[in-house]
Amino acid sequence: MRSAGLSAHSGPVAVAAVAVSPDTALRAPALTAARLAVSRDLTLAFRRRSQLVQPLAFFVLVTLLFPLAISPELARLRSIAAGVLWVAALLASLLALEFLFRDDAQDGTLEQYALAGQSLTWLLFAKTLAHWLLTGLPLSMMAPIAALSLGVGAAALPGILVSMVVGTVTLSLIGALASALTLGMKRSGALLALLTLPLSLPVLIYGARATELAIAGNAYLAPLELLAALAVLAVTLAPLAAAAAVRISLE
Amino acid sequence: MSWTWFHKLASPPYVYALAARLTPWFAWPAALLILGGLYAGLVLAPPDYQQGEGFRIIYVHAPTAWLSILVYVVMGVSAGIGLIWRMKVAHAVAASCAPIGASFTVAALVTGSLWGKPMWGTFWEWDPRLVSELILLFLYLGYLGLRAGFDDTQRADRASALLAVVGLVNVPIIHYSVVWWNSLHQAPSVMQLGKPKMPASMLTPLLMVLLGFTLFFVALLLVRLRAEVLQRERSASWLREALRA
Image 1 (cartoon, rainbow over the protein chains, first blue to last red):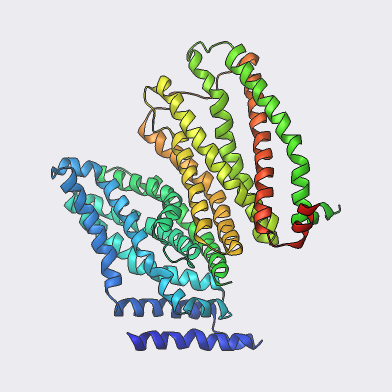
Image 2: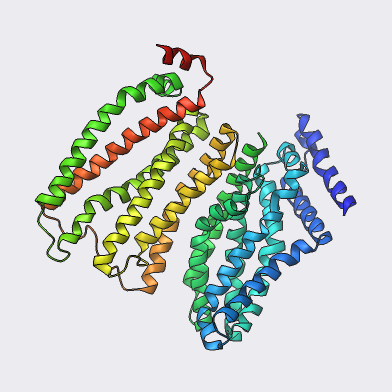
């Protein structure tokens, strides 16, 4: 684990040294930089697996709470399954935000990213992408399984998977912005929820609707398209805002 | 066009004096308009043929709801100005807007649910406007919470300004997604506000209180802005001289 952290450090530091010289030919292309940032985060996460497992376990636990609190009757569970899945996914992705920037802010990696001469927006987008691969995507894969346990028919599973995949992209990006804004703070848990949840409501509305339609066996393309529109908007704007927020916190 | 007036607005001493001079020009008309509008609305206007006397709460509810949105826009725009031109005074304006806006939002929620009791039979209906208003309150609270989280004013200014701008982009998205959500789950809203034509005896007082509350907000903002400038510039020499004079 230690050596992974060290070797991961040497990359951005070297790039930062290059950025001082005006010779831009020495700078790695943006795509390579992004690929390196993604693979660094993935490597670190796979060496510290609790980070991968905790949000998933949380997601399953929250879905488990509903049958216990409401009733084990599958017909009733099926009627609330869409809402349960999305609320659980929203809370789990909120919980996972802790892993996004905190360690990198503490050990100075984020500062090196900001100095690296690469576009910070682009690097943060890569980091968020890695975060989504580590939390959003597994959550989306887990959602159909959780849906089965709530009495949802197998025919609805592709719809659930697709809407979760598209929706969690936006959730990760909103989360990246919110956690970039709260970077400098000692305790930011409740504030992070207060910042993230209101902005995530459209995702919840369209995502739960698409899932609900999929469970009922209806066409769910319309809410899915709106969900995708939100994802496009978030992909284009959120990294810019997150980069600005990181710069503010590094000032 | 000369930009001198804009550059002058970046100077705290100038704004401090200007705010003091402008406050009565907004406060007195606001007081007259609100008192006159309330008298005309609560006493002179005829009762509504459907809602009876209950409709009169519109003379408090509509202005607070209007201001809850207007204040957010003012906050977002001045935060954006502060972020782009690094203008301290613009950040001070945004910071002074937030508590005012949050208070108007609470007032709009309370009067809205009080109005809901006679009209809908419950204090809380999952009506898109009420839900959007509640979310707006959380956006204000998030802004205030983010500001409170920083010890350093400058960082609080810039981080919260970014949040305000992001919120400004998101408010219409959130609002229309809530409207869309609501259109699925219940029949079109029970009450069509503003749609039926209002007679002049009802409309004139409404316009009076709308304008009056807006001027009241400006006056409040100017007072808060002075307090904010005082706090930010507490160690500045111009302030010591201004206070001694």
